[in-house]
Image 1 (cartoon, rainbow, N blue to C red):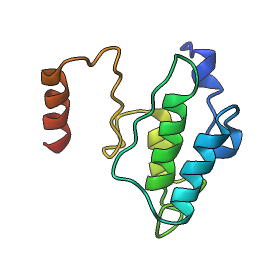
Image 2 (spheres, rainbow, N blue to C red):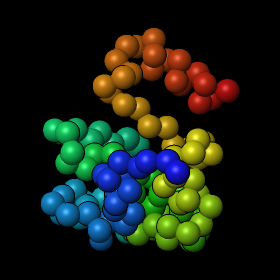
Image 3 (cartoon, helix red, strand yellow):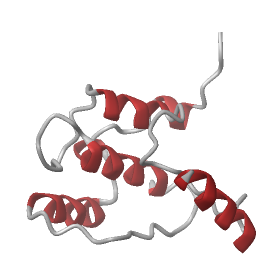
Image 4 (cartoon, rainbow, N blue to C red):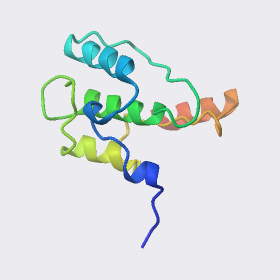
Length: 117
């Protein structure tokens, strides 16, 4: 039996489940609904405010296969959503870059090179 940190075990899986970041959720949902998605997003702030959680939900919404185009709420059940949620490495379109461990330019280039290979 493997141990899962509580924050990961109970991580929100949809924008509707996110608490305390209403302004961010509203902005991202509006962008998805209007199909006006920026080429990049930077999530910054203190520890524990939901940066990774919201980024994962956004990735699921953009890659969700329940519709022909990106959806404002991911289904959470298609293969793409499951791969992103589990973080198993099967989701080739999603790379999590942790600034605490990936600090150098060469490390970022190395990640970029392996992603394109």
